Amino acid sequence: MGSSVQAFCPCGLETEIMIGGGMMDHETNCLFPCCCEKCHSLVEANILVKKLRCPKCRSTKIIPYSDPRLASEPVGCVVESWFDLTLTDGAYKCPECEMPTLRFGLGSSLWD
Ligand SMILES: [Zn+2]
Ligand SMILES: [Zn+2]
Image 1 (cartoon, rainbow, N blue to C red):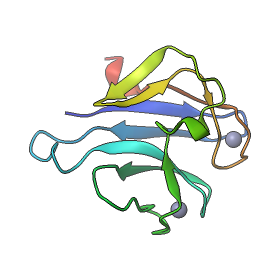
Image 2: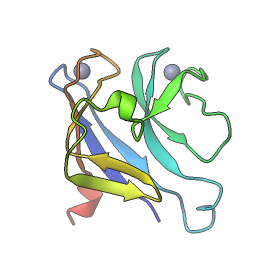
Image 3: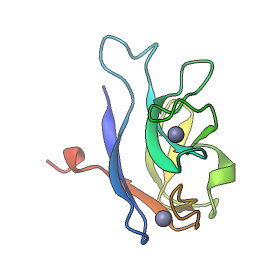
């Protein structure tokens, strides 16, 4: 069972990212937002595979947003957590403009 979060940045980046996996494949498939340093995109990737790959450019230079290297404010309220992976409402590094101004909020599917 997955959910989604929305990512916003003042540079214009705005995207909705799925988190988690399906009912049948949650042990092998867990999507989480990641920053690709190669194609500068915010992508969703399966973080349960041994080698993370960007779904767009196939680069392995992607970092999950649970990594403290991407967070500019270490303390924030938890927006979404999945196993030991946590997103907060603090600011993160934006993959497009590389400024620490990316924020996550609850996805629209949770507002129904
Ligand atoms: Zn990429
Ligand atoms: Zn940006």
